[in-house]
Image (cartoon, rainbow, N blue to C red; front, side, top):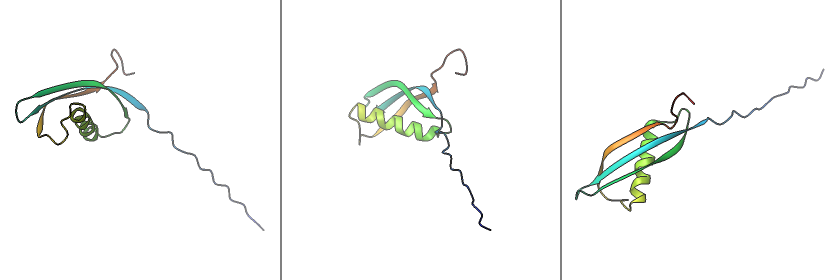
Length: 86
């Protein structure tokens, strides 16, 4: 007797991306400050630390501060939805 086995492969849906509003303020060793804000779609389950690192790198690149010693004076990352969950 010959048996046939069927296998079903279903791709899991990609994680939902939720818009977040962010603000980053940096200060260089010589006292210059730079602030930038925007929104970023973040996949459910993403790491806050990875998002922070990506945003700080983005701000440094935007202001031509790549490779310049700086500290983060302010960081905020909040869902960009008001008045409800979504």
